[in-house]
Length: 522
Image 1 (cartoon, rainbow, N blue to C red):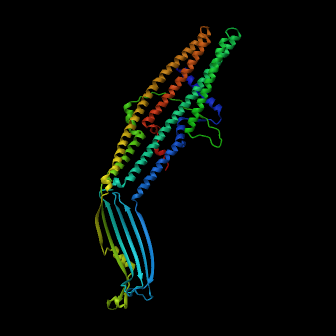
Image 2 (spheres, rainbow, N blue to C red):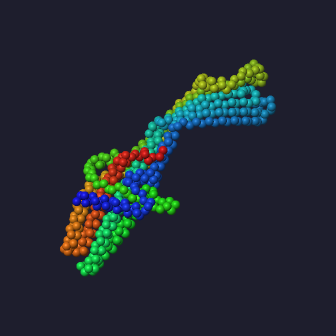
Image 3 (cartoon, one colour):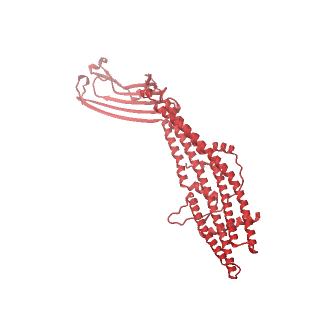
């Protein structure tokens, strides 16, 4: 009997492949692995999800730019000319002419603990034709450093690096979401593939039953012709043939619909009016028993389900927002410190009797910009400041709405995570139960099909010796066809339930030796 059943399966498989190839010369044989890889590479929904980690990574890079130093440079050139209106500002030309050039180079940086640090070098040159000048032209340079550090509000790495921490978590969330999208796509492909396999095999079973009905009709017509059977028996056989033909039409429609579903997942829609590519699945649903422990399944899901890991990471963002909102209730207390080192040089003008009021210049002592810069670098003149500033906004004293809102969001996020865990556990329990039930259903339908075959064969022998009727035989034919279809459906349902269990546990990629990084675009 086992060899006989194996022969029936081989016959069905060969007939399915042969009939499919005959229908479309552009048919494409595809294994389940081919379909999964094709969907993961070409599916449009997956392609959209693949872009999200790239966007999140760029957002993280942008957030990190906050702590990159910024360089600023400026140059000013000023030229002023005015009439002389005082004896102290007279000139040989009758008008006062002043020239001023300045240069500024500064580096500013935000520190990881919330403070700011700046380093600047200012240089200038001042020249005028006014009288009574002691240094003309005059060169100046100042090296300054300023430091400001919040001590209460906006203090600490968590607050200062809030955008970076959130962006990093969002990157993880996008990767988990991509992982979930890949798992869902794998399950959808497996489900569509095996349903297509079932519909093709079901179509072949319907064709076999139609052939049996037509053989019986032909046999009855010959029997009526020779007077061995009443004409009513021919009508019964004709009605059965018509019913089987209607069943085939419905089965053919199911094959086309299921093939369209799989083709859409693989993104094989034709372009430029090209004909549809017919997909011929070459794999057959394996029937292997699988024992699953609910406790082990729950532990596996906790470690592997991407949606649960995404929810926990999202909870971290809510915790960061709560920490930030609590910090913003504190008053603003800032430590400010500054240091500067100026330097001045230029051409010193020597007057008669060392008195500029005489207006008599007796000589000059030359000086250059490098002398001023040397004094600055050598810290010849040191100046420093230090102080504290306190800022107490009344909004933080009278209203704590922002912090209260963050607390509510935190409570909401915790409940959301718990609810998602409950839904996941429910899905896992249903998946484990479905696998166990599916395995038992296959075994039961195998027994039912064996019995239907034996009953049909026995009834066929009884008809040969006149102990049965055509009507009874047609009933047994229909029962056998239904039993075969039910067994095929049970095997496919069990195979799909195994894929559903892998999805519920979050191990679909791992079982197929794939990684999320393999599908992420750099």
